[in-house]
Length: 404
Image: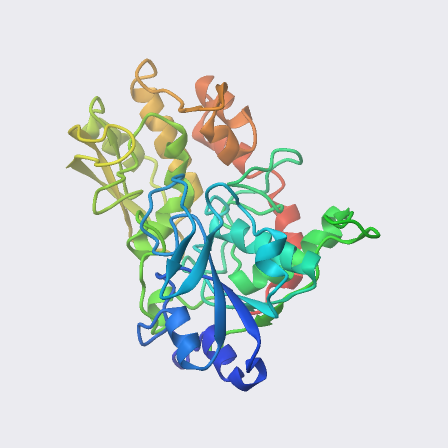
């Protein structure tokens, strides 16, 4: 669906209200890949509009969005402004980073998947601002993989991690503004989450609702390419919209010894290893007649993570129809097909702090998915484990959905 007019971002709506922020000390969670339609970064635009930016907060991959995944990022100074890293020795602001501010603005390009950490960094900032009595303003921008489809279900209670939480489905279908509303409303009510103030005080609702600056001329069924907005990769291995579409499914390979193409021009769209029979794998998954996707054989050399520097063979995913493409189902089908091809060379990537567990357990919410794949379960059965309680998330998030 094409937008009726060029989409106007929440940050542009906020800039219309610049006079209201005159003299106020402002913090900002963003990175340099989060840009305006004219290509300016958010800090540039706010400073030029007269906002008094005194502190920046950087997510995973750093404020410049260049660090690889899971790499700790240090604090820094950018154009004379302090940048507090929220992916390193800390994953949330400390009280001293918040209490001297009058407001915190959040504007960062999320990609619509539970595994992607920016949404948790935003939640941490919102929570800490609520504790300190500092108002947050969330500037909305499109969910690049759309808001009409939900894939997978929420993690079981107690299985939350740094790549999964807040009762989210794998493909959650929310914009950042809708997530903020869900966080403060539906999630808080459905999970009955109350806590004692981190610095004392009476028990209170665990979060207060931020102010969302909603987009203009945006619909849930508006494809990103139809918004009229430029795309700038939000992290090193998400270069294109097509990468974002396949990420919810092929990210499962991060929990294995199979390369997901990191360091190539098509990360997450490319899957392989030195020992894979690529032609056989392509025939296997193509026979499944998965909707909205085709597969081709590819040779590549990853420059990061699994098999870095080694020639690999595998397949490339080509999304042919994003409206019917199911990334999670496709990823499970592909993972099961790779393991079937050579169970002796396929392996799960262990967690460094607990070799008895795999990183895929974090992504899937426990070892049930891994055990099913190892036992030779069908892709349909394994996919069903990832989709448990999907309807509960759909119900819990329904009223948070602002756009129609």
